[in-house]
Every structure is written in C-alpha cells, then in structure tokens.
Length: 361
Picture 1 (cartoon, rainbow, N blue to C red):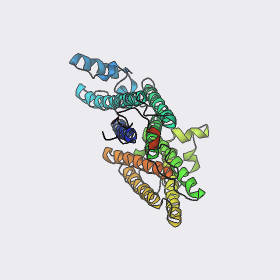
Picture 2: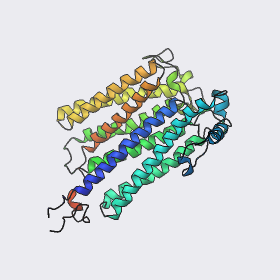
Picture 3: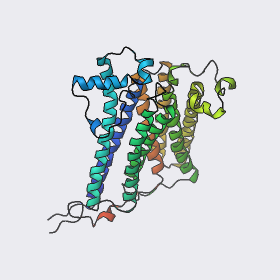
Picture 4: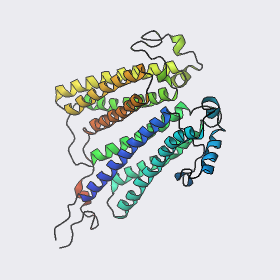
C-alpha cells in the first residue's frame, strides 16, 4: 500500500489555522461595522451559552429592547427608536458575538483532535496552547469592554475598545507567524539592521493599530476633517494638545491629541517602511516583501486621508480597517522571513496512522 506523505498532519494544521485566521479577519471587520453603526451596546447581558440564540418571539424581542432602553446610550442617542430600528443594531452585535463563539469552537475542537492523535508536539503545541489561552481571554475582554458602556457612558471606553482590538490582532498575528514557520525553510541572510527595522515595523504597526482604535473609540475621525493641517495648523498648539490634567490623559481622552498622534505615527511608519525597502533592495535580502509592505503602507495612508476627509463613511472606514489587517499580515511575514521555519515535517514522521505515519503494506 502506498505510504501517506509524512507532512500530511502539518498540511492539515496549516489549513485549519488559515481558516481560523480568516474567521478572525471577518470578526474584526464585523466588529468595525458594529462600532460604526453604534450597535455594540444593543445586547446588555453576557450569556455565553444561552445568548447564542437570538430572540425568537415578539415577547423576547420586546424584552431585549426594554433592557436596551435602561442604559444611557438609548436615552442619549436613540430615544424614540422603534423595535425595527433596534433589531438592526441588535443583529450587528449578535453576529459579532456569534462569530466569537464560532471561532472558539473552530479552534478548540480541531485542536483537541490534533492533540489526541499526536500531530502537535513541542514548540508548536505550546504556541497553540498560548493562542487558545489568548482567545479565551479575548472573550472576557470583550465583555469588559461592553460593560464600560452600560451604566455611566453612552459608548464603550476607548481604552477597552483598543485593548479588545489589539488583542484580537495579536492572536491573528501569532497565527500568521505560526503558519509561516510551519513551512520548512532557511532564514534569509541579512544585515542585523534589516532585521531590526523589520522588527520595528511590526512593533510600530501594533502601536498604530492601538492609536487608530483610540481615534475610533473617541469618534475623533469625524472631527478635524482636514489634511495636512489639523485644527488649523500642521502642528496644533500645545494648549490644545495638552490641556487635560494630568497631561498623559490627553493621549487617551483628548480627541485632537489622539488624532494628531495617529497621523504622526502614520508618517513615522511610512518613513520607516521606505527606509527598510531601500535597504532590503540594496542588500538584496527580502526585497520583494519589503517593497510590497511599503506599497501597502502607502496605500493605507491614502485610505486614511480619504476616510478622514469624508468623515468616516462606513464603506471607507471598513476598507481602512481591512487594509490595516493586510499591513499587519505583511509586517509579520516580512519579519518571519529572517527566522527559519522551526517545525520540520520529519518531526511528525512517527505520527499515528491516518495523520502521517507510513501506512502498513
């Protein structure tokens, strides 16, 4: 009988993780739409099991609507909303939560199956346990975020929103990195400075994602809608940027400061990407990946400007968010090029029959 290829379990793991990464991208985009449509507080309870089902009768819909009417957001923003309008925002938030549950099951069940058959070992198994733990934490962080808008605020805390988004993208980046390392390959030989700039690009991308989430949470993209000037100048006055006390709260609570920081980080990220691409081209080390990353960041900057000038229409807002995920993907892959694949197919040659061990003849 013909032997089963020894790397079949790794191929199955790659397919599984690719599907999980795609679901996370969808989850982030649905979350963005939920935020842009002001839908995130439409479900005021956290019911991990029973909340899977939406209201199924008029009585249940009425109960859900009455619960929403008790929070400040309804009284401040949606007073007079009818049941049909409530259903629109409810479905966005319900879809977002349902996707979270589906991702959890789509990760856990195959993970346990692979573990039971010995297809995950050593560093790979430990990394996937860590990703699973971060996913479980993400569910709690999501409710922690929602809870911040149920009593004294009309929206969720921008800091908690940023934490929720960045944690989701950290999980996504960990999966993208793992997928890259599941392909056996040598590391690209490159000067240390090129590796350091690739690392700095990834780190700065995460900082920029956090800053962008703060802008979104503060609705700061819908004000100061001019470019390149902001608040009438290229650099706003210190009195406008730092008027809150203590001074550091301006970084998180001041709409002008948050948007200005997001712009400055964008310029820095673009400049670093150009420097990295030129250096990679001159040294002929990962030049293609560096060039694509620089082009993606350039396009993202253009999308950001267009989104700002048009006061964040939902279509452009979601396109800007999707492009941010692409930039993150490219930044992770670029850094991974300088690291060898750590999981070799040969490690799994002894996997149980049906997962990659040679079949008996």
